Length: 288
Image (cartoon, rainbow, N blue to C red; front, side):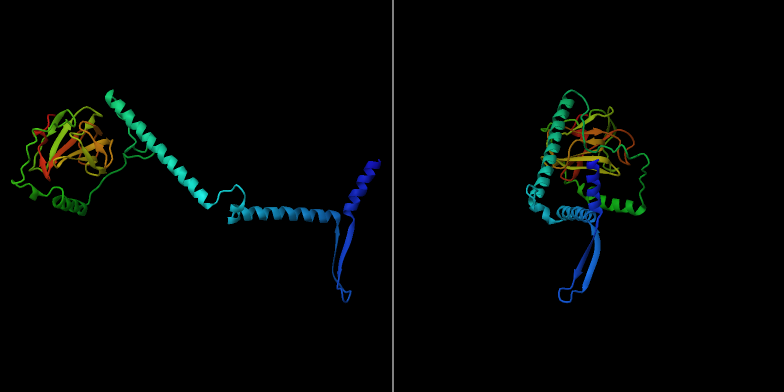
């Protein structure tokens, strides 16, 4: 009972009201007064401390003052951390490419299809609904550029005869049946080769990849610059294994045969061989 009475006395003391008055020192006139209790004082102090802690936390978290906290990284250190993270990510990517390169070599030796991360189609995108249309203006511009640059008939002069390449061993890009032969008059500057599905296309000679891209007309194209000003072109591929600037050796796998591009009428390889800007008949130099 005594303990309960003491607790009640303590609670009553907390609830006891006090009158705080402020007087003018010279005139003793009452300036301000208000009533309070011990409980009100404790609650007010508690709320004040909570608000102060919140303000300090916000000030430190969203201003530059956080850099003065011991152990917190400054701006330079954070930039270095981000830079190192990007470098590590880049190194991991290069390691994956190296692993994939060696795996592709193993697959080629075993006669399997090489895997590639290049030109992979997004499964979330439907390509079947895409319809390519060409306007009259677009066709006229394409024809003009082709005549001025790549297929300018003025380079087909008799003085520009192909050199003798009998001493050079050309690898076959793809073994199969030629369904369309070289015909300069019809502006068909190569041969069309039909072979088995997903056949690997090989480089005819060692060289450097100068073009590895996709076009609306010819699909996936890869073009390789060789010695003696020879240039080989491989069109309508389904996948490319090389990028621009890559060095390739003779007989190395560079692509997978396909049916890409508007000008393709089926799965085949359109192969062209050029020398000093003049197209050569591939059948005169390569056994298919």
